[in-house]
Image (cartoon, rainbow, N blue to C red; front, top):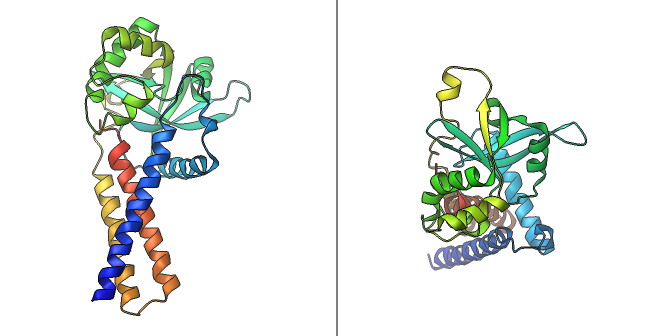
Length: 260
């Protein structure tokens, strides 16, 4: 039993280290000081962030709801080829907006500005739309009405406070300044009827808890099997690493996920 206790303690320490690394990388990724390119992060940070982004793409394409995140497909302004990126789609009172919460100069912003149309999807659901970029005063009103309440959330508003550089209770003037740096596109779905009325980004299921639980279960199971001698060191250690990665992903979704 003492060996099992030591193994569990070691796993707990490793889990904390993994979560600390993930937090550091994501915190750096969501800090965009003026004039600093996101590509100026360290090679390690970029590598980890790339894997996290790929995982988010995979989850959304598989139909998993991660708050307002959906996949945007729009025609490239120079290549003419379809380009797909994860974006934040917000809805209220039957209206829908795409907000450049991270980077005003993102490629998808430039492409959508040129194309004026595209589609958003999650899993097998795909919605074609036309888009109009709002002037600064209207964009500021949308940010204040739709994103304002989210900024005050201790956890759910963490990412928005960093990417928009706004405090929890920002002034109207602050929202106007943010609108100049974060374009807002109002969407009109193609087709009439139920599709126009049905919300696209509904309240997410409890994916973070399920993911953390699955990762923890995998980790503890492999620790127990390793301590009992059923598995070799390499086998149970590999299982522990996989379990920690899954649990770390779940914790990322819990901390940084936006709730609709």
